[in-house]
Amino acid sequence: MDNATMTQSFRLAWTVARVDLLRLFKSRDYWGPLLIVGLVFFVAIPAVALLTVTRIEASPLLVQVGEVLDGLTTRLDERAQTLPAQGRTAFALAVFLLAPIAVVVPLTVSSAVGAQSIVGERERGTGEFLAHSPLTVGQIYAGKLMASLIPGYLATLVGFGLYSIVVNVMAGGAVGGWFFPTAGWWALVLWVLPPFLAIAVAVIVRLSAKVRSTAAAQQVASLVSLPVIILAYGIAGGAVLDPTRAAVIIGAMAWVGAAYALIRGRRAFQRDVLLGLGDEG
Amino acid sequence: MPAISLSRVTKTFGPKLAVDELSLEVSEGSIAVLLGPNGAGKTTTVRLITGALRPDSGSVHVAGFNASTQGGEVRSRCGVVPPKPAMYERLTGRENLRFAADVFGAGRKTIEGTAEKFGIAHALDTNVGGYSTGMRTRLALTRAFLHDPEILLLDEPTAGLDPESARTVLSLIMRLATEGRTVVLCTHLLHEAEGVADRVAMMAAGQARIVGSPEELANRFIGTPRVVIDVAKPENLNGFGTMDGFEIEADNGRGRLTLRLDSLDLVPDIVDRLVASGAKVRRVEPLGATLEDVYFEAQRQTKEPIHG
Image (cartoon, rainbow over all chains, first blue to last red; front, top):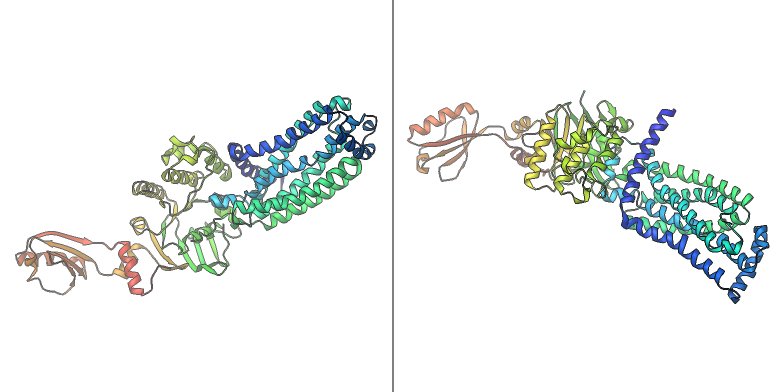
């Protein structure tokens, strides 16, 4: 395939993605709840947790948490070792315990979009237009993937930015200045999370082409999301603990897995899945 | 070379046989009507023509391209109006058309003019969710025409429309069909096909049971011409016996006869005879065979319901 053909192919896939994103943007009732979920995870929960840690002194619970986290922080960051108990706890909370939100929220966003990507076209009858169009199945598939991944990545970047502001404002005083994101978090967000999101979306879009209703697709998407979240939770911890090795290795493996999932998904995707069910008159 | 050619095409969905050894040719620039009840295989045939579905066996060629292996070429030459013209409800008509224009490489400048042609330009900036069924059909027709297709595939384009909108849509289709495009119109409504079709395929159970021009079919199944004669008084018909070349098909007892003739050339002789017998003839009207006549006569003669 030459450059011009690839550019044209990408342009057409982007046309499919763009119309899905436009529909999503116009569906306030769809993204409204997702926005609330994002704000709860990226802003409300860390704000409350860190506010509690930094405002309540000499709490037995805080002391216990600080003791548990001492073991982790000593391996994590030299700067954390020199902090008082309150600062260490705040640092550990921000870096470790709230890490999975970086996975949960974008995965929720992407799976919500991806779940209805194909079956939604079929239910509405709009898939008929795509099926009769000169678009190749590869272009349609790529467009649907982009439309599912972009909101997830966008949620990651915006949420990550908000989260950074919240934890630095709330815990910066106790930790001794701007401390977040750490190197491990950069690796997690930019290298580890994207392939995991791609794996989940590839599986979900593929399932969306197989199920008979959006409701069923969403059920299945939640089943796919759960193990990915659990896996990512563990990996996030490892990547944050040892950013130089774990994140690079795990990220590389995840990229290979993502490429495999995407290729398998593309091969399984056929034009006729876009056509309405039960009206083969 | 025909614009569309299906050769012994079969398509199944699991155990269901949707299209069964279907062979059909549509000449370039002609209007073919696929006539048949729901479930006859019309929609599947349209999907096979564009290559949206692949046949289990047989071949489909459109404008010289194989629909299975050169689907992109085929689909870029076709404009399709599906039976339920679905659009993205939350987008405006213009946004839906922009998407279609981008996909078909039609250029967005064509949107306004084409929408004007189909009488939907005034609603382009309204969300499609607020459209009536008639407006949706007009938008679907606009979308199908944006890239100026050589071949139009119209699958029940008047489904769900009120009679007035249906008539408007049909007249639009007729107008556009006269511009030299090849048109395939699927319908289960006999009156829609009347006067439109260059060629009719009566489908049932995935087969084109009867294929031909309306005239060929009328000659084949109706055969002899008919004429209706009204006279002022029923008793004037008492002395009207039989003569060579016609037979009385129906007598309503109130002065109306329907005659089946060997030839319309007999009409003057029949009128002369009635006048000679003292009848006041009020109407003499030759009856052309309608598609409905042909359809039901074909059913009667083949003793096999065309209904699948």
